[in-house]
Image (tube, rainbow, N blue to C red):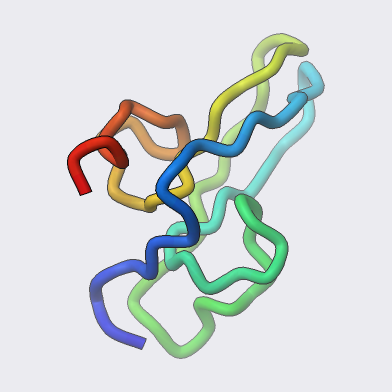
Length: 80
């Protein structure tokens, strides 16, 4: 695996988040459980992004792995 993340998809993942629950967003793009980490980054320079949902809501998690607001989508996939 290189230091450049794999683009899992060029669109965000709409995910129902549960308030107070902790999630681990895949930063490497190799997880088979997108957009969440399954440990595929092991042996690379990548680490998952840990975050806790503040409220229960639909969130759009980055699928291209290029967002400046990771783990959330910022529209970067539109420029790839």
